[in-house]
Every structure is written in structure tokens, then in C-alpha cells.
Image 1 (cartoon, rainbow, N blue to C red):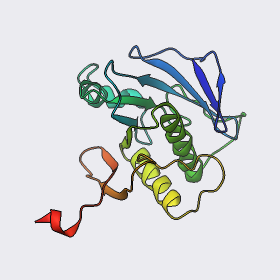
Image 2: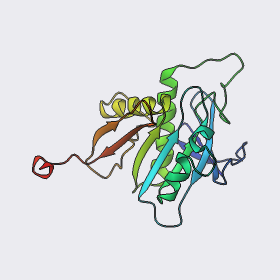
Image 3: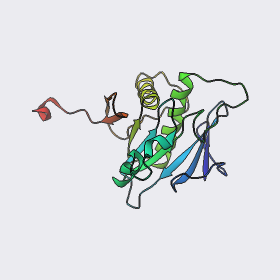
Length: 193
């Protein structure tokens, strides 16, 4: 088990149990909030690593309902690695680093950076994709835009896509289904016909 403290990987005894049999993951934000989730790694080499999280009034369990037949289970069946996380204040993640503390949207965007950095460290050669419903989908897009515009300095600058490729942002969002942010190669005009 590992914990990420402000971008550094350190040993940890995760203080939560796995909900679906994955490896418990605990990431520690700069303000001390512990973000918790699970990592599922397929037996075959990882080509795609997915960061999966939920909407504002939910937790990560909402993405695998009914259990074993939800979005998490479907993504795992594709052979992708999946980092399935609870946002701060939800599910197994901390509400705040101290009693009475609060957070804002920018904290969620920074948390996405921490989650993406974990994927980048574990799967440096895999394409990384964020799949999220509502709040997480939006925060993932905001993180990617801030990285692309150079607005994020210092730690957690990892883009969601693979750093070894020349990729541009494309996004798909549907109000009736989970939002997704996927970064893929821009096609040349000749390949669009």
C-alpha cells in the first residue's frame, strides 16, 4: 500500500478497506486531506489507465451499481487499469483536514492533479483517461485546461494523456450519462475524409 504526499510516494497503511477487491490507494493533498480509493490492474500489460470518479452528491460506489454490472465493472472488463476514487468529503475520503474546515472547487481540481500524478507514476507509458460523472468530469477538464495553459506550476503538472505523445484535448459530455474527458491524437486534415 502506498500514499502520495504532495507528489511524493511514501509507504503507508491505508486506513480504509477495499470495496471491490482492488488495491487500497490513499493520496494525501497538500492541505492534509486524505483521498481514498482503489486501483485495479489487469493481468496483461497496461495500455490504458482510467481515472474514475463521481458526482457531487454521490460517492464512488455510485459508479458500480448494480455491483459488478456498473461502469467500474465494465471498464475493468476492457482490460484497462482503473483508479476508482472518492472525492474529498465523499465516501471513504476525508471531509477535511480539521474539524470545521471547508474546501472549494479549486481544491477538487488540485485533487485531480494528485490522482493523475499517481496514474502517471504507476503507468508512465499508458494512455491516461479521466471518466467522471458531473463534478469529477468537470474538475478533470478544468485540470487538463490548466495544465495545457501552463496555469499549474510546481508539483502535480501531469496531464491526463500520455506525456510521451503529442496529443490535444478532446472532450465529450452528455447530461444523461457520465461525462468523460479523453485526450487523443489530433487527426490530420487528410485522415478526416
